[in-house]
Length: 224
Image (cartoon, rainbow, N blue to C red; front, side):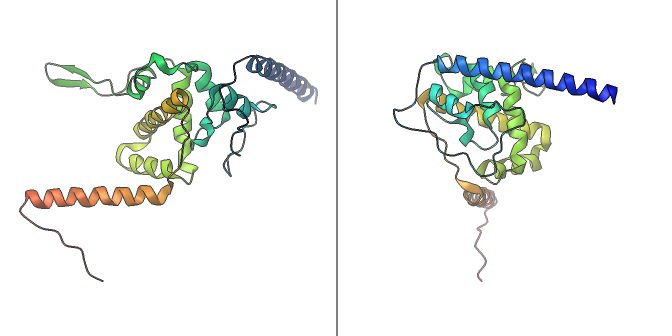
């Protein structure tokens, strides 16, 4: 009981320090310029997106929307803590990266193959210490539990590339979605799992037609 009492006091001390950080963060965010449209508020969060246990006790999502002019949490997998980490690490001036490809490369989420004399010695991504990239990887890993377009994409990649490479590929895709939102204030619109499944089916049919044509064959759909 004595040890348990000591641990409880330590826990309370940590909670006080966390609350102090939250107050300091809220005060700092309120000093930043408002980039949102006058009179416009962020849409309610998606159903099923719950705040983490260590999420700040103030309206962090609303403050991030105010200073960035967009709501990154509309992207599946990105919660308010991931959005905060990305904005804190990247900033709000996206003009430093000409395109989303440059942005993803800076995060270390692009292939960085080692080639010598036409021979590939190593395949992988560039190793960088970047908290934003780590946060996007965590967001990509959580897509397995979502019910949206990105979940279907992640499931398909995971079946082909295995989990580690699929997570990196989805983190790359998330970075490409974040870039125009922060640079141009664009809104993310989820197209749904059905849209992805239909698009993937059409791509598979086109690939089969190309193979059949190369072999001098013709495909015809089955009748009911």
